[in-house]
Image (cartoon, rainbow, N blue to C red; front, side, top):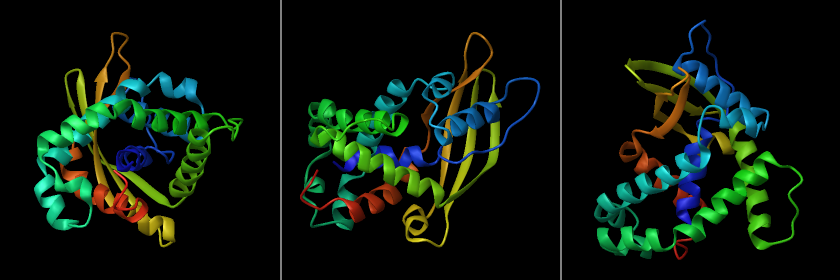
Length: 218
């Protein structure tokens, strides 16, 4: 279940309306469109700038690798969490075999966020609606800004700073910097492809996950 929290927290960095302008499409413009789409719960606009399913699948893979590569230190950090009692290969195998289960919750949460008419007719939907509501609360407690943009041909990297405010939600968010990778499509428009610095973020993300998921829930 902690993987769900990782993905939701990673998505938070995109949840505040940003800024971007210019005649030629720029990575900042793509980021602005994504943020506006999230703020207005506009799934169609979001799809013009990111393949959501592909992005979430890649993030799941990258989080799995980051946990596997750091599981020894994570065990030292959280010795009572049985998820971190395992070998790197076990983490990879376990996450792969449970991918459909975890991603069903993630996808349901995305659907609940963009569709306010989702009904409380299943455990998954109940959980998803709760996640969607918490996502809104966390977004409202954040301030964000672009601190650097680097364009390399058809690839671009945007360093995006997230800072929580003084509320409890803001304290949970804390301070993090995401490095987003964008790729230019055949029409010359920039699209979000992945989070480049998951390895750097894994410890603050795990710290937050441990606050909201019991140690016995993997």
